[in-house]
Image (cartoon, rainbow, N blue to C red; front, side):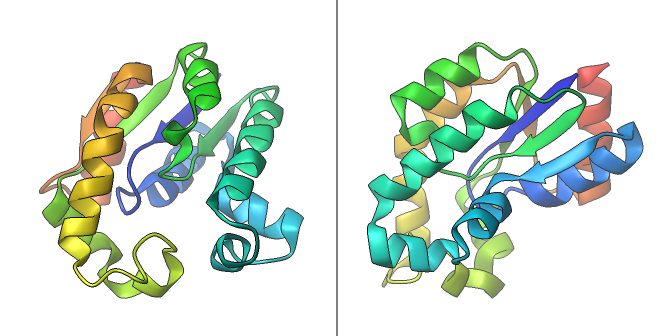
Length: 168
């Protein structure tokens, strides 16, 4: 079984993925962490030095590679759906889980790590930036997911439990 977690930054993909990994005894891979290891640079540095397009190509190549694995939980970056190629790839999978959060939940979750978020760190209006990006991506998350989990007003354990029930 493969589980692919998608959703906007700050929706808990990494934390939920790690907990699911423990409960299901499956390998967990965070794509952003993998890209940082492979490039020996932070996501921020990759964006700054090479630009978002370069980062998105790295992301697509890694996604293709990781989907060959079995018994794995993959946490994607929030922008994985910005590439048409990735949308096509994700539509071919059957356990794509969209962790769905609203602007307020996302802002609260990322508030302590704005500097690690290349698309937020230069923003003068964080809620507006989140809302704008979320509006652009929301229908894309919906278009490729098999399961949607509302994370608003829930703790991590509630999200993990709901996800476990949803995947059967």
